[in-house]
Image (tube, rainbow, N blue to C red; front, side):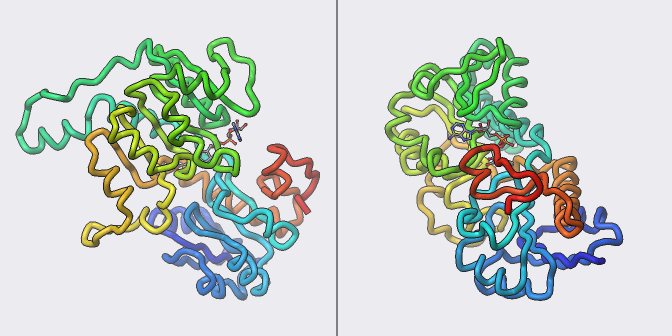
Amino acid sequence: MKYKVLVYDTKDYDRENFELLKGTDFDIDYLDTKIDINTAKLAKGYHAVCVFVNDNVNKAVIDVLYRAGIRLLALRSAGYNNVDVTYIYQKIHVVRVPDYSPYAVAEHAIALLLSLNRKIHKAYNRTRDHNFSLSRLQGFDLHGKTIGVIGTGKIGRVFIDICLGFGMKVLAYDAFPYEDKRINFVDLETLYQQSNIISLHVPLLNDTKHMINAKSIAMMKDDVIIINTSRGGLINSSDLLDGLIKRKIGGAALDVYEEEASIFFEDFSYEIIQDEVITRLIALPNVLLTSHQAFLTKEALSNIVTTTLNNIKDFFQDKPLQNEICDACKKAATCEKKHRCF
Ligand code: NAI
């Protein structure tokens, strides 16, 4: 059997990796466009559809896919907050790529922190303009500083290891803490109060949405640096902006933004962006923003495609779906499935 797969929201780097790794079992078509109620209709006749982080798989899209005969949704991501997992349950199986490269994301978070702190983005522009002044480029030693890591899963742990290598003190918060003498697991309030830098590595769920807000920001140290490579919705962006403008927050390094879906991955350099929060954030000297590129390494892209293709094959060969995600998995963190979620 040849598996016909329709892949949404693709860029050249996605297509190159799929073409390189698909072998003879797959017949793949690629769309530039994201999935919505109109583009979902194109899935008719395919065995599976494959989407990315900013494809909004809501109730209406799920209905269209289901009517088109789709029974497998393959996510090219670890996060699945863009899928209505409650509604899709018992209609369409959802598989994801849980750990394509925690190093890619953790290393990007560190790159953002180092660049923001040492003002590399400013220095780069200066020297290109033959401006060799060091004025206002001062940073601080990371060594000895306290970093608060929220979420100590695969990415959080790699991130912590790097921070420990820098000689930082690590405070951590997770719904499921683990034993590690090098790390001090604390409650969120303590983490907010004692950290010089805070980095987010939890998934976006109902109880993590806007966890960084005016109230939590007020608890933080003055000049705190906030890093978010997880999901934009973890931060109330208006409150973040307010904290930056009032100089409570010393800097923000962001790879994600809560309203990124209509902006990221596209070139708007000749347009006028209507979202005033992001344009204001970008304009601040102490904000560094990348457009959801933390995953973008050679190894991660290759792993994403390999796991996605294996997920699809496992489904059609009636094998247990290691990487299936469902409503129950989401609520219990560990689903008790044996073979499939339903
Ligand atoms: P993971 O599932 O290994 O770790 C998540 C951790 O969060 C777990 O330890 C879990 O116990 C904890 N957690 C879950 N709910 C919580 C809550 N309510 N309160 C406190 N802790 C909670 O996930 P992984 O691989 O480390 O990824 C983390 C996040 O990174 C993903 O959910 C995704 O949103 C984001 N990500 C971003 C990428 C990017 O390119 N910017 C790429 C890949 C992932």
